[in-house]
Length: 271
Image 1 (cartoon, rainbow, N blue to C red):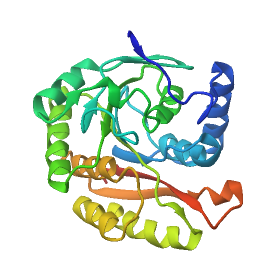
Image 2: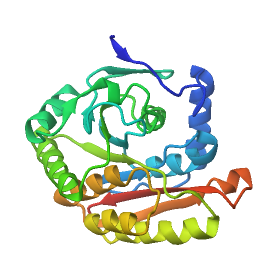
Image 3: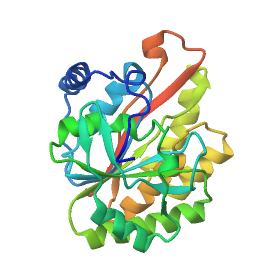
């Protein structure tokens, strides 16, 4: 296998190249937001574009996307290693996206629990849906995809330290991007309450608090592990400010507010 082929093209986002490019361009054109300086990390949702694409567009359009993005997403399928990197270039409707193998090599050196395991990425959508927006915003894009299963907080912190060391050694701009949706299939009222608990910990720059709050309150935030790791690594790299770009839920599109999925976009930056 020469490339990692798309898993959800034509389902979560358009599978036709021209339609996808127009869809992404239209969403980005509607995301009128001032660029935020010094962004190190971000959190962006990964549902179908009709539901969460607007939040993803607004979040990523607030960032000057560097040429390299380290994308961390939850492993929904449970396949492969717990901390799984991809070393295959990604083939998407918008073209081939190369893996930044220099950064990947540094990660393998500094995060000894990480390993290359393509099976964790083969069917996973959480990282893939971010890429068309990144392609539109950075023509020289390269990525390092990292799929994460549920791991203890101590392992999150250790991984974050390894990623921060790898990025420091790489010594070029890198965006840490965590892919996560928020509460799943709660009423809008319940989702807003639960999601605020988690997001308050994020904007307070409290990665352990985020991890523990999601666990203690049974918040079905599928990407809490990626978000925790990105927040911790961003802090280690000098991040000292976090802000929510936008929060919404699936009911804003579907009209069903009894069973919603929450979507949040956030950035962590040097103030």
